[in-house]
Image (cartoon, rainbow, N blue to C red; front, side, top):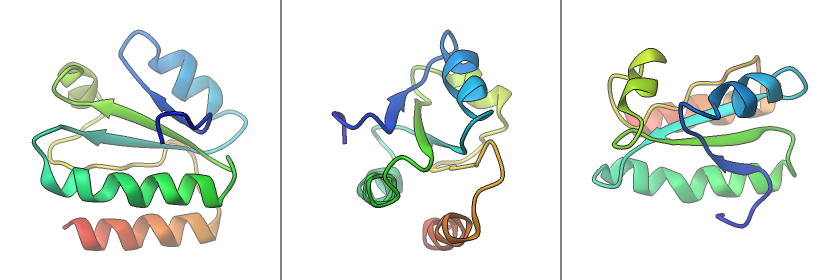
Length: 105
């Protein structure tokens, strides 16, 4: 996953450039996570598989909430994992996100 061009680590410094600018041309799924979060660790391989299966149809932007707590707060992330889309997703991806949310809660 770390070597995928479809997965990026996001910080407050590159959020606008990476997430907001990219969302103008394709959907961005923002994954708010932390090392201590067991559900986050279980979700990571699922998201990695999805982004590769869809061959970059969307960008997976990963935000480490331990390092970027202010960004997580600004985005309204109150519990982990939180995986909101930044732009409307195609129905097939939207279904996958709904399924992931159901499993994570």
